[in-house]
Length: 217
Image 1 (cartoon, rainbow, N blue to C red):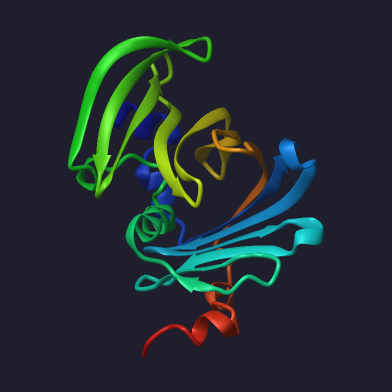
Image 2: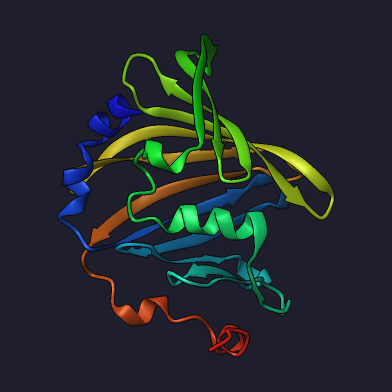
């Protein structure tokens, strides 16, 4: 984990910024769908993620430091998140989410050195909150290569794998330009096209009116 953090440029490389906007695209081949994506983060743990799914509308998710929420597309009702869904959005909202923080894990154990996606990787079993999974670290570079975990869906638990590829430098911080999500009925490929720092307005983190109505004072 320490080698991964160093390979990204070190936490100090990101600590000099207070906000970021990640822009990109999402391809869902099974649906023949190309979407646009925007992720807004601000210290210490604010998040809004917007995915525009063409004719299906807009999918929003956010966290304001206290409340996690989601606004699905196609007119589905918004919801306040709880349980594993809330844990996941809190983890994603961390401004340093791309860095490994051992204090966020109740357990992390290196299992073995394996061949993964054509490279030698360390396989690490982890427990974070109520969620268990596996993380793979590239033995040569130290960079996180993949995350494997179980997601609860209406169809039941589904194992999902996120593979991090094509790390590139953005403002002194390395991030994967391409993330392939596999598992479930429809996998997705996320491609980062731009990362901007310290240009996010506070208003970007305002939830939709329908979500605000659900948030208790």
